[in-house]
Image (tube, rainbow, N blue to C red; front, side, top):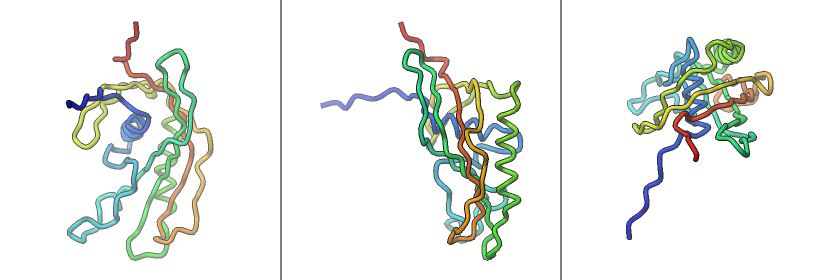
Length: 166
């Protein structure tokens, strides 16, 4: 029996990570769905410690019932850490959050085509048509690892240009 192969389609987390990684001052390597370890396999400080890291996860949304328009609500966490310190670098985490907030106000640059890939696999392109914050970014306290984290909720409206239904 042959296993049918499913088509590769963009999804909310891929689109959100690509859009966030395309914000000026951020890079795709600074965004993912899971916070990486703060040390690499050789025991050295992980590269994200220098830049901070952003995690995204879908927490809700309202897809259009008649059109192929996606409107996820995403939890966005902006992380920063100083290994060996018990003083969270709040300003670095806040700077990541501010870059995202300002990107939602930049109406000329929000609609841009996004190249999507994950685990070495390329997905069809997506275009974010709109972005806004559903909640303000806020500090999260009481982290065991003394990481600084700002959390906010982001709403994206996106389409896949290859979606054509007849």
